[in-house]
Length: 555
Image 1 (cartoon, helix red, strand yellow):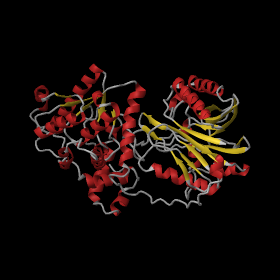
Image 2 (cartoon, rainbow, N blue to C red):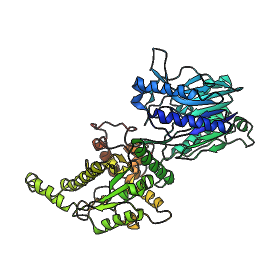
Image 3 (cartoon, rainbow, N blue to C red):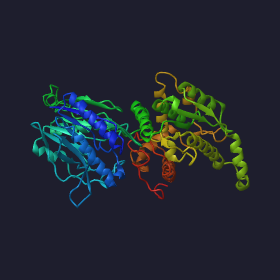
Image 4 (spheres, helix red, strand yellow):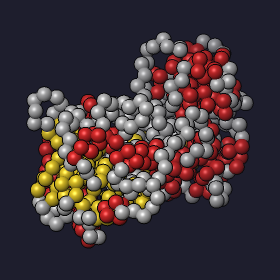
């Protein structure tokens, strides 16, 4: 029995395109001699569909797609992910389901049991958990089919009370097949391998694991589908961040000549390593931009290029994703901009070959100050005058974006967003945040990665002290702790959810920890107004981190 996995990039709610892609792959798998082709979780409608699932018309289109696909299954079986209606009045109206199609019929529908509600997941909002478990008989074999989270309930502290595979093992299955939509973060690929290996070693049967690929707004799916033999060895590992289709016969996995694998014992990640998995982070950001623009029907981007590290890295990644000719950089020096910053920004665009313009804002800035002067009443220069420059730039960028149909890319990093070191309606403007889930020191690591073969980002941008250049001689260190220390504290609080006592116990200064956490919590109102952030960590700002704006804790 040859089983092929189809690792594909779907578009939420694009039923015509998704269905055509699936049908095309069914025929490609048939041509490769496959008996069964497996697709990823909720591939029919795209994942996560969120509140689209509350529309009956949306569900009706899912069922129509199933009807179209099953007509192509006369001599090949297909496993696809799609919502299924719950016939019982009690509970939610839908299941997250895997549909087994064969001989032009729906032979069986498997319901997902474990419905995650943590981080970016909110499945129990829409779906009812399965309450029965049955293997799928096919060509003399028994298939134990699960969906994503269903295989993640192993370990010392399980999140759920039921483990679907424990129920299915009573029916003596020959193989496990898992349909997944497992998002990327820079630690998750190793976690996946560990959990699949743990399943194989526990149940002693092979596993086919089909993951989705592609970006859906802020969530990036990295693919990396896996096929394990019954002894816990990886027989095939699919590429990351691209579509692929491949498979092996079940008999190869059952009769594998490889030795029994040993359980993986991964060292828990407890500290922030700035260059960890930096190549995959880069690929995730490129795919995040490419799919955001492609699936929304946008073609061109614009951003403010300051000669600083954040805008430089954003520009380089955007040029890779969209083509240099489709990314316009606007340099907007103010009275406090240094000449080397302008020169560095120009050199960067020349290296990348993207269009760039210089719009000096001195006169606009003076006009603003003159208009506000009677109301500022001679008070000393402060953040009001600084932020006016940033908001002028935001207005100019949005004006050009509106006029020429660009999408404004935001260039803020996670360190700035954490501490509120940004201007609402100024440098926090944008349609998509590229670096908002990367701390400042990770941005520097990305810059070095971009320059790994030749100098693309001018070395001076990487080496000079970071500055917003909104007042004479300004440096980020005037307002923020050293990034090398700040980023590590932020990581402990945001990603690892460590409190002040635990962070201080790691050797950080107590006063600095208190100040840092206060900055994070008192600036939630700014982040609540921010654009979508491409998620690359285990805890990004946005849909996966829900904090009250009005709160007293640590503020």
